[in-house]
Image: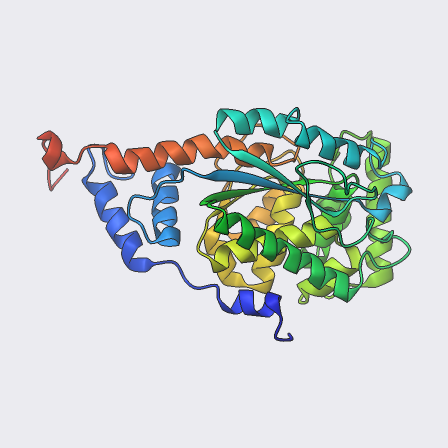
Length: 356
């Protein structure tokens, strides 16, 4: 890999702070509760301590970053919605009326939308962060989705957005996405990386009929047979069957990991993007928190491949960052517990008997 922003970012990702995690575990075990009784919340706050270097982390500035782009494969009729919905939903995010905006408001989190490849001119859209690389990808059923240069450009755009958001004060970030056809691209990427068939990972996406699911599988299988992406080369997989927003989210994950900022990943598309990031840099997995298990059948596989377990099971499949934002209050609760819950000594509560 050449000495560019991507390679420098990957090289700067480090291990978790083991000593801070040890101290966090020690504090958790001293609090007025049976050890381990708060389950995933305890493991989560211990991980957050290792990420941030603070035994009692707190996150006053929370943001969800939505990366938007279009996909040439939408021309194959793989979605229930037309391609112009991508640009329309970007406007919906910017006016604060989408589901993710509603959830973010309750979590006191900001919503940031980034155009990396929407197939429309959004240059006048107020509040939109523009990192446009192309007006959508190529149709992977007929040609490569992106050039190598575009793939690296998208990854580096994600890194730059992470750097900018952190410099502006963000301390807890979540991934979101918007792009008609992106469950098809994500399924193709996952099938390539996992070495499985499209049938194993393809779901209903935006709510397509069973007949269209079969068509979607066939389109993906055709694209994989045409391009034969190398499972051991995540850049090639993204280039041949990926998406601009998928690559940007992967870069965003790497950028956050390099600066020791935790990333809450959303559903299927965001998780496949995070998987690409961890294939480029295995240490990046330490900085990820899985928010929920979506209805897309490939989501569990992608999470398992990174050793991640979701916090929520809500039968969701919307995307946008909705599941990730719903994790913010749980993270706040866990961190508040870590800071303010009394220890056995402070509360004068008798501790567990040695032989119990």
